[in-house]
Image 1: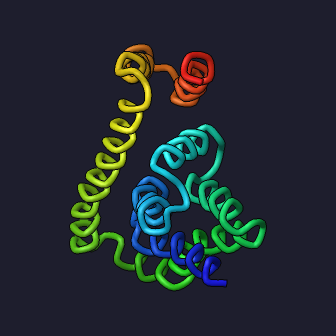
Image 2: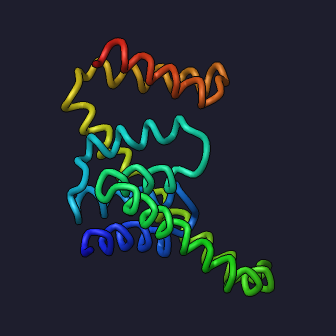
Image 3: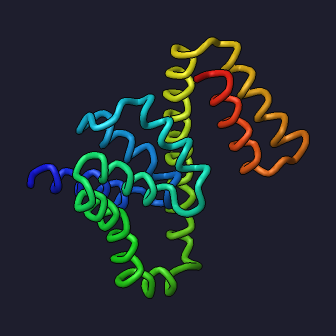
Length: 177
């Protein structure tokens, strides 16, 4: 029973404090499931994140469903999904009118402006952790090749990110497994 409560908290807290949606809550979810509860390793979490990004839909709910199922079966998946969705539902029900009323307020715009760098830093730390873990587990050449190829495909050739992700997954399946 305590494990289900931990599952709820592990996904409810990032949902409450993860202002900005999925990308903002990913580092918070990673802290909960890797560092606080040790349900996954950093490598497993990064693989789950990579696979989750290839599938359509919100990343936080896909991760919650998978981790919840791994930890507590079908009931665990339901609890983790509910905990992920519940903060947004609460915000929509109780705060939407208030936010809409003050959407043009300089204070609200200033608050949003201050939160964006924090989200950027959290995502940069998470990217660094994934990069360093992959650097240690595969050859540096592979990491640099995938990173450089992805950058060029996205920025120089304007390839859609979905195709770059699929290509990286195929490259990993063929050359890194």
